[in-house]
Image (cartoon, rainbow, N blue to C red; front, side, top):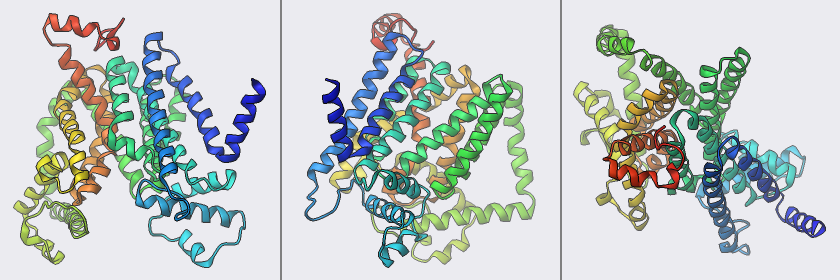
Length: 453
């Protein structure tokens, strides 16, 4: 039996080395995800991870089977994946001093679309050889590690049911599922963002100074790495964590919160009262409007935030006035939540996305209750989740204008909002009448532990 197993592993390793390493990583991830919990919770975690892994591996295997390799060297899920895989192979060839065509050499180092994720893929393929399908397994592993890390961070404070509910959303929400199996930078970006949040929370809560210092150092390194993965990625994550620390500190001090509610409008008015600050705020908003204008002028399914007179000629944005700016800001956040409305669907693919859009609306409706309930339980952790999501929401809402791009970038904030919405659902469910609560307590999710402990 041992010999047969070794032969099978050897054959698989020859065909796809990253598949073997992926299996080993999933074994280690399962051990980490289930350690320290009771048998019932371990079974739920095991079932969720097993189904998540099998569905993702089946998708990659289906891509391999469905691809006609007599016409193309490898199959892809998304158009940009081809460029990522090819450029990473060329970078690996350059590192190994393998002869490379001049055009490939130039394109490998092209600044357009550059991200440090290319070097991660290049290093892996330099070690094990070209793996156009194995890199999808690497993305899956990165995403699953990030999801489990968030679960382990949130579980002690929020309890079992909200943490398991949030984990299930992360593993099976269709849009997040799609990005998790890609060879793009999204899985690596999500992993490092989750690591940043976990390090920030550890630095805030761990009583040992050695752990605090180590967590802060790791946090700085992760934020610096995020800046190389995505343009302004480190700024968004670092700013979100800073906002999260501030929110957590304020919420845990009710008197400070009340004083801030009173003083903040006055402080903003005084700050904008200075002409230099007013000009700086206006120029910042105008730059965001220009980015939005650029997205609207691209091909594809777009939406508008400005009045009609501002489209067609970008120079008209120089005449953006106070009321125009106010309408632009309000529309930006409204459209961030509502795009696309089900009746706005313009294709079959858009119609298929309607069920997930309805789920997104439900998550948004549960969010206020979730934030209030979560802040009561753990203000610092809730602040970090809110801050990390909020900074991304502000940056994306004000600059987006393409529906597909918005839906894709909304996944930057969704992993942190789902845990808050799950907490809100559990809070509302815990307030139902006694008879309904008795039926709820019979659920395996709530066995041996209250739904909102």
